[in-house]
Image (cartoon, rainbow, N blue to C red):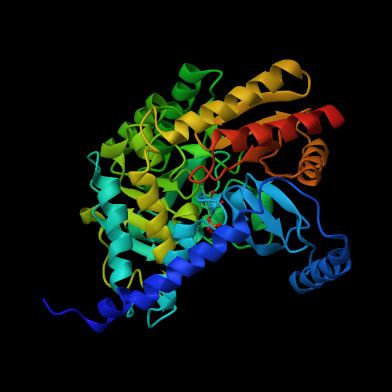
Length: 460
Ligand SMILES: Cc1ncc(COP(=O)(O)O)c(C=O)c1O
C-alpha cells in the first residue's frame, strides 16, 4: 500500500540516524551523572541571579533553589549550576520515567518533525488517536466500560470536564460529593471540590459540594460505616440533587492516605442506587499502584463512570462511559495537548505496560516494598521522629516529628541540601512525601536515597 508523506518522513533513514546520534550523545553525557554532587563554584553567582530573576517574574521566590540544566539520568537530575540530586518528587509526580529517558527524548523527535506543535479540537494527527486508544484499551482491559476519552491540558481541566459531563447528564442535579481532605485542582469550580478553603480565598462559590469523611486505616469498619451513613443522610436531605461523587483513591496532596476496596465499594453501591455518577480522579494515582489504573488495583472497574488521568501521562484526559457522552459543544478546546506531550505520554504508558511493572509482583510493588522496608527500619530506629511510612506503590510519605509545617520544611530543606528532592503534603500533620520515578529507577537508587534520608535524620 502507498504510504503518506508523513509516514515516509517518520521512517526516513536520516530521522532514524538523527535519533541514533542523539541517543549516543545523550548516553555519553549521562554517563557522568552517577551520584549526588555539589555545584560548580564559578556558576553560583550566575545561578543565584537567574533564581532571583525568576522569583521576580513570578512575584514570589521558587520553593526550592531548583533550575534544571536540561539533563538527568533516571532519578538523578543536574541543576543549572552543575549540582546533581536525586529527584524523588518528579515535579509532583510528572516524570515517572525519570529525567532524560532516551525513549522519551526520541519520542520528542517524532513530535518535532510533525507539522504542528499543538493538537486540538480541529487539529488531530495520528498520535492523538494513538494516545486515546492506549488509555481506553488499558482502562477497559479488566471490565470497565470507559469507552470514550477527551484529552485536555491539565489535571484540573480533566476534572472540570468530568464535572461538566455528569452535571449535564444528571441535570437538574447541581450538587457534587467528595471526600474530606481531597484535592481536585484549582479551577474556579474544582477549587470548591478541593478540600482546602485557603486555596479559594476570595473566590465566589461556583458549585455546591458536600464533603464526607474519608477512610481511616486505623479504624476501617467504623470509618466505612461513618462515611456510608453520612452519604445516606446527605442523599436523603438533598434528594435527587447530586450529579456525581469524586473519588481520590489514594489522597496524594493530603500526604498519601489510601482507602480500601471495601470502603469504596460500600459507598459506590449506595451511589449507584441513587444514580449518582462515580468519578475517579486518577490524576496522581495513575501508574503508581499495582495496576496502571488505581481503580483496577482496588477492583472497582464495574463502578467507574468517569475517570480522569494526568501528571505522568503528560497529556491529561477524561475517560467516560458511552451513556455519559455529552451533547455537542460541552467539551471542546483549541488545545488538547502538545504533540510532544502525546508522544511522551504514549511512550511512557507503553513502557510501563510492556516492562513488567504491574501485577502484585510487578516492578512498582517490588520497588515500593524496598523503599517502605528502608523507611520502616528508620521509623524503628527513630521512633520519636518518624511516623509511618504511609501510602501504596509509588506514593509514599511519612510524618517527621510533630508534623508541623516548621519541622516538615526544616527536614525537607536538609534533605534537599543533602541531595534528595521530596516535598510536603497535607496539614495537621504535614507529611514528607515522595513520588519516585518508578519507571526509571533500580533498587540501588532507592538504597542511595534512603542513605541520604537516614543521614538527614542523624543530622537534625
Ligand atoms: C488528585 C489530583 N487531582 C487533580 C490535580 C490537579 O492537576 P493539575 O495540577 O495538573 O491541574 C492534582 C494535582 O496535584 C491531583 O493530585
